[in-house]
Structures are given as C-alpha cells and as structure tokens.
Length: 385
Image (cartoon, rainbow, N blue to C red; front, side, top):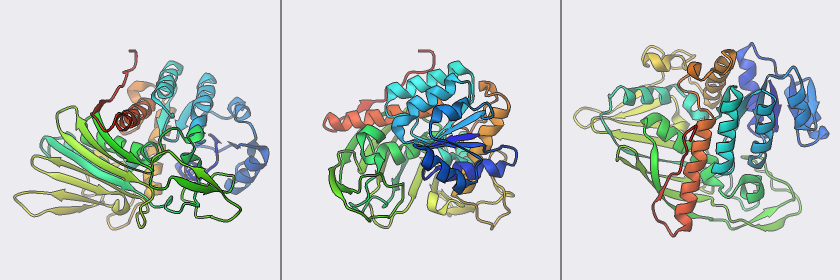
C-alpha cells in the first residue's frame, strides 16, 4: 500500500491497514519532499516521495490510498487507475458530478477495486439496522431523518481548505459530512433519494487565515492572520423524497458548539423504528408502538449473522470509530485479494459508484438552494448510460 496526501485522516488509513496484518505500508507521497519525509518518519514508513507520480510508479505499490484535498482527487486517482492500481479514496470522491462520473467510469474500465471511505457503514449496529430493515422487520419505511453536527469550525480563526472553493469545491458542510449522512441513510434504509429541497447558509462569512490550511479538527489559532471571505456553507437543512414515496430530512453544521461528531440516523418503519447515534455507536435504539422500546447493545451473541463479521469484541467491550474504519478497510482488501471483480465485492463496501452518487446528491442540494429553495431531482447516470 502507498498513501498520497498525509493529512488528518491519513494516519487512520495507515493504522487500519497495519491492523490487517498482511499488507505492507511501503510509501507516502506529500506535497513536498520535506513534508513527505516528516510524515514518513511519523508513520514509520520506509519510502517518501515529494511527487505522487513517483509513488504511483513504484512497482512495489499495488494499492493507492488517496487522502489528498478534494481538488486533487481527480488527477491523483486517474493517474493511479491508469497505472492499474487498486484505489481507496477518501470522501468525497470528487468535487462535482462530472468528475465523479469520470472517476466511476475510469475505475470500472480499469477493472480494479475502487472504494470510497464512507466508513460509518463499518459499524456493526449500522449493519444490524440495515439487515433488520432489509428483512422486513421494521415494516415499510415511511420516514428517514437525523443530523450530522460538529463544532470544529465554530472559531473564525479556523480556516481550512474545505472553505476554499478552489480546493474543497463549492460545497463545504454538505460535501464533507452531509455526504456521510446521505450515504448512511440510503445504505441503511435500502432506498435511494430521488429529490431534495435545501436551505443553505454561511454562519461565519469571514474567517481569518494564517496563510495555510487548518487540518480537520485542529484548534491551532496562532500566527498573523488575514480575513478571508467564505461563501461555502457551514450550516444546511434538507428535505428529502425517497424512491418508494417515503419522506426524510436532515441537518448538517460545523459551527455548532458542543457537537463534536454528532451523527444521528433514524429510520421509521410502519411497525418499528431504528435509531443509531455515532457518539453512542455501541447501541441501537429500537422503537415500538405496542410494546416497550428497547436498546440493543453491540454483542456478538445478539447481532444477526450479516452483522457478526463486524463485531470483534465480546459484549460489554466497547468498539470505536477506528474499529469501524478498519472494518471497511478489511472488506476493501478482501475485495482487492480477489482482484477487484464486481461479483465478489463485499455487500457493505462503498464503491466509486456510491462516491459519484454522493456528488449528485450534493449537486441537487446546491441547485435547490440556488433556485430559491425549490425541489430538485437527483440527476444520476447509471453505469453504461
């Protein structure tokens, strides 16, 4: 494995891969030789490249992890695919639907494994809820709702590349964390979002930059600072319509004090409701109308067979964000070991098709807001269209 773009999430990619026990992390590429050398020492990786093309050309690298800023996802991933390498890309896959479709089609043409890190799918109780709904235990789904709220950008002195449209794309909160929520909603409910109505705002329109880009969740605010006008949204609420006629809604925000990584998804069926909270990820709330509600704890003796493979500790032993991330990486490398053939892809695993779909959802939300808050159809082209 070789990693390109050693920022906040890169350390978790390296950690997850090393936990597998049968994959070597052999190289890192950074924005300069100096930064690559520093990160290689930090991660205890042997080779460091100041140019990602050199890493891709390394014959010992079979899998590329792309954790660069969003605007680099297209050129880096296309170069890796052209070299015949398997690719695991951080989300969002691309900054717009055109780029997302290009990457999806290129990955399928290359006939390699292609994965997007929608890592919340890796939580065992997410898979438990998905299975219950798929088996009809909840009854027909009528409502899907929740939120994803953070506070790491509450301080105007935090300026991230995510706020710069030339690097992060035209969307900030929706593309960054709204993409996670929507992927989880579709994955758990088994339903596709068909249209959206979005209300978007920028709570902090001026931020103060020290000339660089804050790493995600960084609280460093030192140095001489210049004001930067920000147009990308940091707060949004969206109404949803799903393919079976059911409704939904969610809110995202990254300027809401006290909310650290507050992702909540609830799916209401006609007989049972299911709610999962990321910050209490070892519990699944099960709601009933004619019997007491219940809270199911993560326990290998209790989960359904389809969720069991994602549980690694006995009941009462808490599993974490990093464990769920590792579950996704484990499935990714199981697929890679089979050569990336579509028919052997693990069911849970999100691909570039899911990454492309995510860009289409965010695009529909931006179009809805730009049109004055009206419903917009999600424009998604299936493979081969």
